[in-house]
Length: 235
Image 1 (cartoon, rainbow, N blue to C red):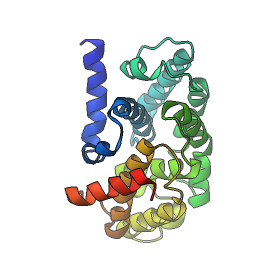
Image 2: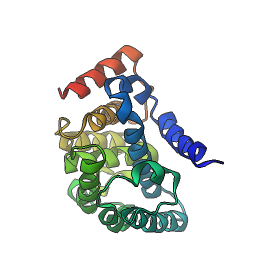
Image 3: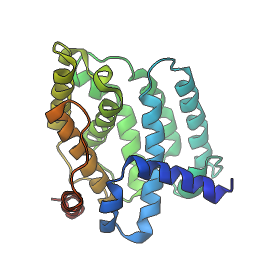
């Protein structure tokens, strides 16, 4: 497979997981879309390494590999197809690499909300710092962590719920944790337009999860358009 085809494969994998983007990307300048998708596709790789069940060794090896890869990007040496797009950006790639082990540590059941957010604090700060260079504006760190936790909850279900919220049946526990993450996910206006649109769709998924306790179908295209438009405006 050519480098271009391999890159397209990773970008398409992310788009498939986030079909809302095909609606909302109209609010993002065409010249910026591929960079944004490459960045979000990279973050999805990290989410996948966080959200594992069973044997964690393959995911730990993946995180270690990504740490080496990101340090290579700091020296303009990439091996992964996403590096073809992202490596030219002068960013604190090594600092992000240093933060990746926190994802392995965050897999365990946390005691409560404070512990869940604190476990990802270093990773969230490193991610936000790099995003400032990739997309031109840093997102709010707590909002970034909330989005990571929202993705974790959607992927892992009750296994991602802190112990303080598990004193109910599984669906209620998921709803309770989703509601608490939403409570802490306050600053949706920070960050670049691409982040705001993506975060609005991720937040929408979490809001539906907080009501139903299980992942719900996407809303209609007009609703997704309105959500993307409002996020792009910074409402």
